[in-house]
Length: 101
Image (cartoon, rainbow, N blue to C red; front, side, top):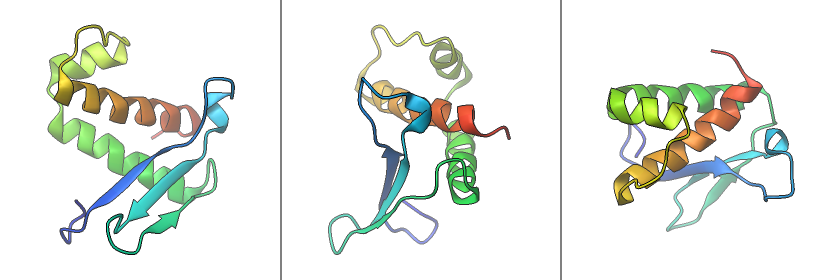
């Protein structure tokens, strides 16, 4: 949810054969009504804003032990909610590889 209480989704689009550094990021707002899709330019300022949002969320919402596991790519045996956090962290890693905060 954004600060106004609206649902949104974000991620990166790619496949196993592509270089993950080239995966484009995306943002979807109002996914259940009339979806608004936005594809910020790879490495651009809007993508950097998305990175800051994800970094802040991880900092505020993920306990230090799980963050450390994710930073070491230790995802073996994670539970359902922690797997979702691992997916967010993977997006964070991809965006971080393009930007330095």
